[in-house]
Length: 126
Image: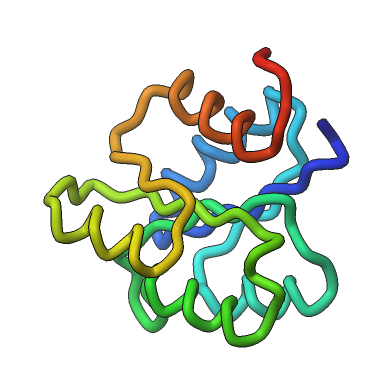
């Protein structure tokens, strides 16, 4: 799975560290970010296999980040997941309309996260 690099972005350092460790233990290569513009800069150099983004972040929230990625890059080739503690229908609807491939509710079961990642990347179940 080392061929699959996942970018994760969250303004919570704790959330980033936990998610980073869990995904690295599954064999993924990870780059983590606390700012959307840093993720965009990294995409100028290389494209990830998948992006997992928090929604509620200062400066550039998850929806704005997704819009910037659509404008600047070949978005259809980079699956984009939102993760959020919001579970209201309007957030779910907006995530779909904006083009996110999934919305994962925090706190989430890691097995559900792995299943969504594996499905999106076309990997066999681990």
